[in-house]
Length: 316
Image (cartoon, rainbow, N blue to C red):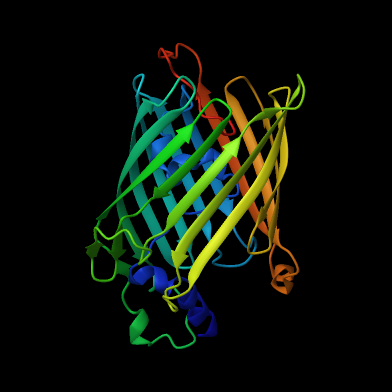
Protein backbone atom coordinates (compact mmCIF):
# COMPACT_ATOMS: atom_id res chain seq x y z
CA UNK A 1 0.00 0.00 0.00
CA UNK A 2 2.89 2.38 0.62
CA UNK A 3 3.82 2.19 -3.06
CA UNK A 4 0.25 3.00 -4.05
CA UNK A 5 0.18 6.00 -1.73
CA UNK A 6 3.46 7.20 -3.25
CA UNK A 7 2.02 7.00 -6.76
CA UNK A 8 -1.04 8.98 -5.79
CA UNK A 9 1.08 11.64 -4.12
CA UNK A 10 2.94 11.99 -7.42
CA UNK A 11 -0.06 12.51 -9.68
CA UNK A 12 -3.12 13.27 -7.53
CA UNK A 13 -2.65 17.03 -7.88
CA UNK A 14 -2.61 16.65 -11.64
CA UNK A 15 -5.85 14.70 -11.60
CA UNK A 16 -7.64 17.47 -9.76
CA UNK A 17 -7.33 20.47 -12.05
CA UNK A 18 -3.87 21.58 -13.20
CA UNK A 19 -1.96 20.60 -16.30
CA UNK A 20 1.46 21.43 -17.63
CA UNK A 21 3.30 20.65 -20.83
CA UNK A 22 5.74 17.78 -20.57
CA UNK A 23 9.22 19.27 -20.36
CA UNK A 24 12.15 17.93 -22.31
CA UNK A 25 15.87 18.57 -22.09
CA UNK A 26 15.74 18.97 -25.89
CA UNK A 27 13.12 21.71 -25.56
CA UNK A 28 14.70 23.49 -28.54
CA UNK A 29 13.39 20.59 -30.67
CA UNK A 30 9.96 20.94 -29.03
CA UNK A 31 9.50 24.71 -28.89
CA UNK A 32 6.16 24.54 -30.68
CA UNK A 33 4.72 22.60 -27.73
CA UNK A 34 5.30 25.47 -25.31
CA UNK A 35 4.84 28.34 -27.78
CA UNK A 36 2.46 27.87 -30.74
CA UNK A 37 3.87 31.03 -32.37
CA UNK A 38 6.84 28.85 -33.43
CA UNK A 39 4.68 26.83 -35.87
CA UNK A 40 6.21 26.89 -39.33
CA UNK A 41 9.28 28.90 -38.39
CA UNK A 42 11.72 26.33 -39.74
CA UNK A 43 10.67 27.15 -43.34
CA UNK A 44 10.51 23.45 -44.25
CA UNK A 45 8.17 20.63 -43.24
CA UNK A 46 9.56 18.60 -40.34
CA UNK A 47 8.47 15.57 -38.33
CA UNK A 48 9.96 15.05 -34.87
CA UNK A 49 9.68 12.19 -32.40
CA UNK A 50 10.79 12.71 -28.79
CA UNK A 51 10.96 10.14 -26.00
CA UNK A 52 11.86 10.93 -22.40
CA UNK A 53 12.27 8.34 -19.66
CA UNK A 54 12.71 9.68 -16.13
CA UNK A 55 14.13 7.71 -13.22
CA UNK A 56 15.10 4.88 -15.56
CA UNK A 57 14.63 1.35 -14.21
CA UNK A 58 12.27 2.61 -11.46
CA UNK A 59 8.87 0.84 -11.78
CA UNK A 60 6.07 3.21 -12.74
CA UNK A 61 8.45 6.09 -13.49
CA UNK A 62 7.29 8.98 -15.73
CA UNK A 63 7.53 8.52 -19.49
CA UNK A 64 6.74 11.24 -22.03
CA UNK A 65 6.45 10.82 -25.79
CA UNK A 66 5.64 13.44 -28.41
CA UNK A 67 5.24 13.31 -32.19
CA UNK A 68 5.19 16.69 -33.97
CA UNK A 69 4.71 17.78 -37.56
CA UNK A 70 4.93 21.42 -38.59
CA UNK A 71 5.27 23.43 -41.77
CA UNK A 72 5.05 26.88 -43.28
CA UNK A 73 1.64 27.18 -44.94
CA UNK A 74 2.35 30.53 -46.59
CA UNK A 75 4.63 33.52 -46.37
CA UNK A 76 3.02 34.60 -43.08
CA UNK A 77 1.17 31.49 -41.91
CA UNK A 78 2.43 28.33 -40.18
CA UNK A 79 0.73 25.26 -38.77
CA UNK A 80 1.46 22.13 -36.79
CA UNK A 81 0.04 18.99 -35.25
CA UNK A 82 1.26 16.92 -32.30
CA UNK A 83 0.32 13.70 -30.53
CA UNK A 84 1.39 13.57 -26.88
CA UNK A 85 1.37 10.74 -24.34
CA UNK A 86 2.43 11.12 -20.72
CA UNK A 87 2.34 8.30 -18.22
CA UNK A 88 3.27 7.84 -14.59
CA UNK A 89 2.34 4.71 -12.70
CA UNK A 90 -1.23 3.73 -13.68
CA UNK A 91 -1.98 7.16 -15.21
CA UNK A 92 -2.10 7.74 -18.98
CA UNK A 93 -2.72 11.18 -20.42
CA UNK A 94 -3.26 11.49 -24.16
CA UNK A 95 -3.60 14.69 -26.18
CA UNK A 96 -4.00 15.79 -29.80
CA UNK A 97 -2.85 19.36 -30.35
CA UNK A 98 -3.03 21.73 -33.30
CA UNK A 99 -1.04 24.94 -33.75
CA UNK A 100 -1.48 28.04 -35.89
CA UNK A 101 0.83 31.03 -36.29
CA UNK A 102 0.65 34.34 -38.14
CA UNK A 103 3.76 36.46 -38.68
CA UNK A 104 4.18 40.18 -39.23
CA UNK A 105 7.40 42.03 -40.10
CA UNK A 106 8.40 44.87 -37.77
CA UNK A 107 11.38 45.97 -39.86
CA UNK A 108 13.78 44.45 -42.38
CA UNK A 109 15.29 42.08 -39.81
CA UNK A 110 12.76 41.60 -37.01
CA UNK A 111 9.65 39.45 -37.30
CA UNK A 112 6.85 38.99 -34.76
CA UNK A 113 4.73 35.85 -34.75
CA UNK A 114 1.44 35.27 -32.91
CA UNK A 115 0.30 31.72 -32.22
CA UNK A 116 -2.78 29.82 -31.06
CA UNK A 117 -3.07 26.26 -29.76
CA UNK A 118 -6.16 24.06 -29.49
CA UNK A 119 -6.07 20.56 -28.04
CA UNK A 120 -8.21 17.61 -27.01
CA UNK A 121 -7.13 15.81 -23.82
CA UNK A 122 -8.08 12.55 -22.18
CA UNK A 123 -6.98 10.88 -18.96
CA UNK A 124 -7.17 7.22 -17.99
CA UNK A 125 -6.03 5.73 -14.68
CA UNK A 126 -5.89 1.94 -14.63
CA UNK A 127 -6.53 1.10 -10.97
CA UNK A 128 -7.92 -2.42 -11.30
CA UNK A 129 -4.58 -3.89 -12.47
CA UNK A 130 -2.60 -2.55 -9.52
CA UNK A 131 -1.10 -5.05 -7.09
CA UNK A 132 -2.50 -4.08 -3.68
CA UNK A 133 -1.66 -5.02 -0.13
CA UNK A 134 -5.42 -5.01 0.48
CA UNK A 135 -7.13 -6.29 -2.71
CA UNK A 136 -10.63 -5.47 -1.42
CA UNK A 137 -9.93 -1.76 -1.04
CA UNK A 138 -13.04 -0.11 -2.63
CA UNK A 139 -11.03 2.92 -3.77
CA UNK A 140 -9.32 0.79 -6.43
CA UNK A 141 -12.28 -1.22 -7.80
CA UNK A 142 -12.95 1.05 -10.79
CA UNK A 143 -10.71 2.68 -13.34
CA UNK A 144 -10.84 6.43 -13.97
CA UNK A 145 -11.75 7.40 -17.53
CA UNK A 146 -12.24 11.07 -18.29
CA UNK A 147 -14.20 12.61 -21.12
CA UNK A 148 -12.35 14.27 -24.00
CA UNK A 149 -11.74 17.81 -22.74
CA UNK A 150 -10.62 20.84 -24.80
CA UNK A 151 -7.83 23.24 -23.98
CA UNK A 152 -6.47 26.41 -25.58
CA UNK A 153 -3.29 28.49 -25.42
CA UNK A 154 -1.45 31.34 -27.11
CA UNK A 155 2.07 32.68 -27.59
CA UNK A 156 4.18 35.46 -29.07
CA UNK A 157 7.61 35.08 -30.68
CA UNK A 158 9.97 37.85 -31.82
CA UNK A 159 12.97 36.79 -33.90
CA UNK A 160 15.64 37.66 -36.40
CA UNK A 161 18.04 35.32 -38.18
CA UNK A 162 20.36 35.55 -35.15
CA UNK A 163 18.16 35.50 -32.03
CA UNK A 164 14.63 34.94 -30.70
CA UNK A 165 12.53 35.80 -27.63
CA UNK A 166 9.15 34.39 -26.74
CA UNK A 167 6.32 34.37 -24.20
CA UNK A 168 3.40 31.97 -23.95
CA UNK A 169 0.52 30.69 -21.85
CA UNK A 170 0.03 27.16 -23.23
CA UNK A 171 -3.18 26.50 -21.27
CA UNK A 172 -5.54 29.36 -20.54
CA UNK A 173 -8.17 26.90 -19.36
CA UNK A 174 -7.79 24.28 -16.64
CA UNK A 175 -9.11 20.74 -16.77
CA UNK A 176 -10.79 18.80 -13.99
CA UNK A 177 -10.51 15.21 -15.19
CA UNK A 178 -12.35 13.75 -12.20
CA UNK A 179 -15.52 15.81 -12.75
CA UNK A 180 -15.04 16.21 -16.53
CA UNK A 181 -15.24 19.99 -16.40
CA UNK A 182 -13.27 22.89 -17.85
CA UNK A 183 -12.37 26.04 -15.92
CA UNK A 184 -11.95 29.24 -17.90
CA UNK A 185 -11.07 32.73 -16.77
CA UNK A 186 -10.17 35.82 -18.78
CA UNK A 187 -8.00 36.82 -15.81
CA UNK A 188 -4.42 36.08 -16.92
CA UNK A 189 -3.02 36.21 -13.40
CA UNK A 190 -0.82 33.36 -12.18
CA UNK A 191 -3.78 31.50 -10.65
CA UNK A 192 -3.82 27.96 -12.06
CA UNK A 193 -1.77 28.96 -15.12
CA UNK A 194 1.78 28.34 -16.32
CA UNK A 195 3.78 31.11 -17.97
CA UNK A 196 6.73 30.37 -20.20
CA UNK A 197 9.56 32.65 -21.35
CA UNK A 198 12.18 31.53 -23.83
CA UNK A 199 15.09 33.02 -25.71
CA UNK A 200 18.11 32.03 -27.74
CA UNK A 201 20.72 33.13 -30.23
CA UNK A 202 23.11 31.81 -32.86
CA UNK A 203 26.73 32.92 -33.23
CA UNK A 204 29.48 31.76 -35.58
CA UNK A 205 32.76 31.09 -33.79
CA UNK A 206 34.47 30.08 -37.00
CA UNK A 207 33.67 28.77 -40.46
CA UNK A 208 33.05 25.35 -38.90
CA UNK A 209 31.62 26.03 -35.44
CA UNK A 210 28.34 27.66 -34.41
CA UNK A 211 27.30 28.18 -30.79
CA UNK A 212 23.60 28.37 -29.86
CA UNK A 213 22.94 29.50 -26.28
CA UNK A 214 19.33 29.40 -25.10
CA UNK A 215 17.21 29.71 -21.98
CA UNK A 216 13.76 28.65 -20.88
CA UNK A 217 11.86 29.86 -17.78
CA UNK A 218 8.53 28.60 -16.44
CA UNK A 219 6.57 30.39 -13.69
CA UNK A 220 3.46 29.24 -11.84
CA UNK A 221 1.89 29.44 -8.40
CA UNK A 222 2.40 26.67 -5.88
CA UNK A 223 -0.87 24.82 -5.41
CA UNK A 224 -0.35 24.29 -1.69
CA UNK A 225 1.03 27.81 -1.07
CA UNK A 226 -0.71 30.26 -3.45
CA UNK A 227 1.42 33.17 -2.25
CA UNK A 228 4.59 31.41 -3.37
CA UNK A 229 5.81 30.92 -6.93
CA UNK A 230 7.28 27.93 -8.66
CA UNK A 231 10.08 29.04 -10.98
CA UNK A 232 12.25 26.80 -13.10
CA UNK A 233 14.99 28.06 -15.38
CA UNK A 234 17.01 26.12 -17.97
CA UNK A 235 20.23 27.51 -19.42
CA UNK A 236 21.91 25.59 -22.22
CA UNK A 237 24.64 25.97 -24.78
CA UNK A 238 25.02 23.88 -27.92
CA UNK A 239 27.97 23.72 -30.28
CA UNK A 240 27.31 22.79 -33.92
CA UNK A 241 30.31 21.54 -35.90
CA UNK A 242 30.24 21.47 -39.71
CA UNK A 243 26.43 21.58 -39.55
CA UNK A 244 26.61 17.87 -38.76
CA UNK A 245 27.68 17.21 -35.17
CA UNK A 246 26.27 18.79 -32.01
CA UNK A 247 27.20 18.71 -28.36
CA UNK A 248 26.36 20.78 -25.33
CA UNK A 249 25.42 21.13 -21.71
CA UNK A 250 22.35 22.35 -19.84
CA UNK A 251 21.78 23.42 -16.24
CA UNK A 252 18.33 23.54 -14.65
CA UNK A 253 17.64 25.61 -11.55
CA UNK A 254 16.48 22.64 -9.47
CA UNK A 255 20.07 21.38 -9.51
CA UNK A 256 19.84 19.31 -12.70
CA UNK A 257 22.81 18.92 -15.02
CA UNK A 258 22.34 17.54 -18.54
CA UNK A 259 24.63 16.55 -21.38
CA UNK A 260 23.42 16.64 -24.98
CA UNK A 261 24.77 15.14 -28.18
CA UNK A 262 23.47 14.90 -31.71
CA UNK A 263 24.39 14.37 -35.33
CA UNK A 264 22.96 14.43 -38.84
CA UNK A 265 22.60 10.80 -39.90
CA UNK A 266 21.65 11.86 -43.42
CA UNK A 267 20.73 15.15 -45.06
CA UNK A 268 17.16 14.62 -43.86
CA UNK A 269 17.49 12.70 -40.57
CA UNK A 270 18.81 14.20 -37.34
CA UNK A 271 19.41 12.26 -34.13
CA UNK A 272 19.86 13.56 -30.59
CA UNK A 273 20.42 12.06 -27.14
CA UNK A 274 20.67 13.57 -23.68
CA UNK A 275 21.29 12.35 -20.16
CA UNK A 276 20.46 14.43 -17.11
CA UNK A 277 20.75 13.90 -13.39
CA UNK A 278 20.14 15.72 -10.14
CA UNK A 279 23.41 16.88 -8.57
CA UNK A 280 24.04 15.79 -4.97
CA UNK A 281 20.76 13.88 -4.75
CA UNK A 282 21.07 10.55 -2.93
CA UNK A 283 17.91 9.19 -4.59
CA UNK A 284 19.83 8.92 -7.88
CA UNK A 285 21.42 5.68 -6.66
CA UNK A 286 17.99 4.00 -6.93
CA UNK A 287 17.46 4.74 -10.62
CA UNK A 288 19.33 5.12 -13.89
CA UNK A 289 18.86 8.86 -14.34
CA UNK A 290 16.83 10.56 -17.06
CA UNK A 291 17.29 9.65 -20.72
CA UNK A 292 15.95 11.42 -23.78
CA UNK A 293 16.03 10.53 -27.48
CA UNK A 294 14.94 12.69 -30.41
CA UNK A 295 14.69 11.83 -34.11
CA UNK A 296 13.83 14.54 -36.60
CA UNK A 297 13.08 14.23 -40.30
CA UNK A 298 13.17 17.25 -42.61
CA UNK A 299 11.26 17.08 -45.88
CA UNK A 300 13.77 19.17 -47.81
CA UNK A 301 12.97 17.94 -51.31
CA UNK A 302 10.50 19.98 -53.34
CA UNK A 303 9.87 22.29 -50.38
CA UNK A 304 8.54 25.67 -51.44
CA UNK A 305 10.39 28.67 -50.00
CA UNK A 306 8.19 31.70 -49.49
CA UNK A 307 9.40 35.17 -50.41
CA UNK A 308 10.60 37.12 -47.39
CA UNK A 309 10.76 34.02 -45.20
CA UNK A 310 13.19 34.08 -42.29
CA UNK A 311 14.00 30.97 -40.22
CA UNK A 312 14.03 31.19 -36.43
CA UNK A 313 17.53 30.30 -35.10
CA UNK A 314 16.62 27.39 -32.84
CA UNK A 315 18.50 24.10 -33.02
CA UNK A 316 17.57 22.83 -36.49
